[in-house]
Length: 322
Image 1 (cartoon, helix red, strand yellow):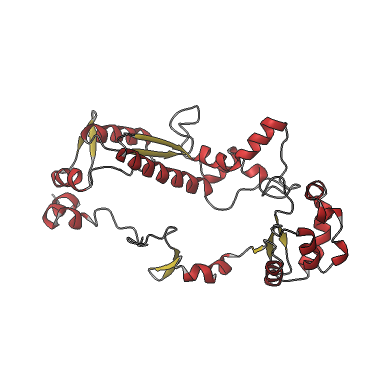
Image 2 (tube, rainbow, N blue to C red; image 1 turned 120 degrees about the vertical axis):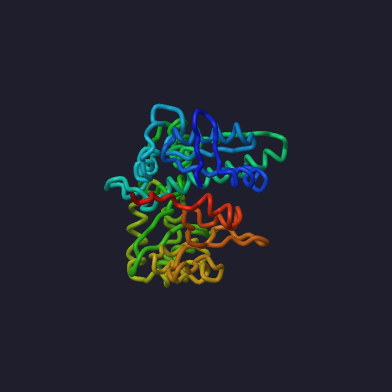
């Protein structure tokens, strides 16, 4: 549909003008953060015309500050600037990015939470029109404990044993046919791990008995456990570890993930035009979410405005041949 903003005034097609305030109330309005200045003009015009409009802006660096004009930064750039790459990877190698667009995911998630918080606040009589979400700040939140440790102790954490600060093992280690996540979990970690690697003679070893010892001598601990891990498959390791109450887990490939029985039973993966796609991450009891192909521009006009009005609004303009 054509929405025009000129000199701060909002122009909607007449059928839309009648429909929008009555049916939607404009509690929320989605804007694509491509031309930020145009989005701002549209948001101001919408708010002037419909006072209940909420504007959720999701951009790489937020709408203020020296980086605010840089709105083409992808997740890899944001992860690096936010400090996430610094603690990702091996200690003797280069920092790494996660491999998926986590910055956009975190930004979108906080944008959705902001919109829901605004709608909830409205029920309590509060009014919030503008929400400024920065994917840079949303990603930096994931590493907030590093800031606290540095401020309090002046310590910079290396990339090794970086998954959970103050405990080891809490890492990904190689197995015979892949990788496993190795986390203590058991109340009597020393006994459980010694039995896991078939070395009961190591139960009283300080590396197993004293958590701080493992944090400092993590390489010695790896040398103790990794030979056994590399002799067994991930399935064997996780099954035996679970029996001993150790919090181990597989590190699945994409193929493994698609075959996961738990996700299958919950209906996480769905078929979309014959292809497998991820389903809704939230299950609603009364109004289940559905996954469908995004409609073309104007495809839903008939259902929203009525066939006659939609035809006038959405019909493409063509030039007559001379």
